Image 1: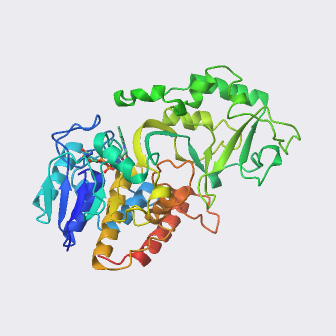
Image 2: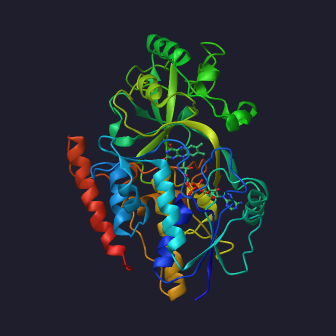
Length: 435
Ligand SMILES: Cc1cc2nc3c(=O)[nH]c(=O)nc-3n(C[C@H](O)[C@H](O)[C@H](O)COP(=O)(O)OP(=O)(O)OC[C@H]3O[C@@H](n4cnc5c(N)ncnc54)[C@H](O)[C@@H]3O)c2cc1C
């Protein structure tokens, strides 16, 4: 069997390497540490958690818990290790980051099918065997240039300037109305109409809200024009937003028969219409502040945030254009990607995509058809999200809004999520071919 080259011994790279090696494949695993460090990596070991030590919720009735249940079913090596070095964190799975990294490093080193190369990789040869790129959201230098060349220039982003996304079922549809400006085309947008007093209260809360600090290596974001956060725009004056993303022109609120004083537009985030993003609301506010302030928008009083707006350094592919559902490049099918660089956002999501890529490589090397992950399970839904056309593609973490809603209405959120999760695990089961 041919050897598989894996670039990067982070969460995705280690998860993929351990799974492939455990299934009889020989892996050449490349890692630049300890010779070269990204601005966020500090530890010498592999699978380093660069920020929080929480791997998020573990109960099945949550998006993160469901993701973990699906990963366990697919043979995750990192989750059993996380359990061995977990620290008390309520319902979440949090770990001692030093021990976690040390245990993953040891597991990689004792695996006889993994050959380690501690060196920085600077190029990719698409015709020279199979390569899995898992170098993470801070991929830089010559390797980033090589990826840009392979993917055709502007298909690699270096910044995440994302607006929040809310679930459709949490919107108050008695306050929100569907319409496009001037009635042109289909009523593609949902509109949240402000009256004058509501807008002024919102404006005041927005300019006073607390922002998240930028890291040193995020410094150049301040000069990146496309990143203008909505709260910075607001500080330019009370009416700036009303002439920008919150302009009400061309709209009539059916509840009043008049043009709103200001208007927030929501745009579909996925084809299924279960998620909507707040148009023009890229933001650097703290998550709690986003919930507090953006819930003042008419119709969003009880909004569930599937993802909050973020702004930071984040290297990611335009996956919908570039990747197949097997996580390899359409144009160069020998080159696979996994981890945050694909748009699977988060520690466990990154590791999960490593499992998916490993399983796709395994099927290919056996000459089998790849496993087909259904859209009804979290991994299938995420895969679909990152490989379905989306002109404003931004990375996405596991969230219940990605899954098809239940056909019956269940008011209690925990009960609802429990049912969705059980259905998701049943759906996953239909696709699993390798133990
Ligand atoms: C600053 C920051 C904070 C984050 N905080 C969180 C958080 O709190 N919670 C969360 O869920 N997610 C967080 N994320 C997002 C994401 O979950 C993590 O970045 C995660 O580690 C991504 O996993 P990965 O396997 O894709 O990449 P990484 O874990 O970064 O692994 C990539 C590996 O590749 C190596 N590498 C890179 N380039 C080369 C090269 N040219 N040659 C050889 N090796 C190379 C790196 O040294 C590294 O070991 C954060 C991201 C960043 C940038």
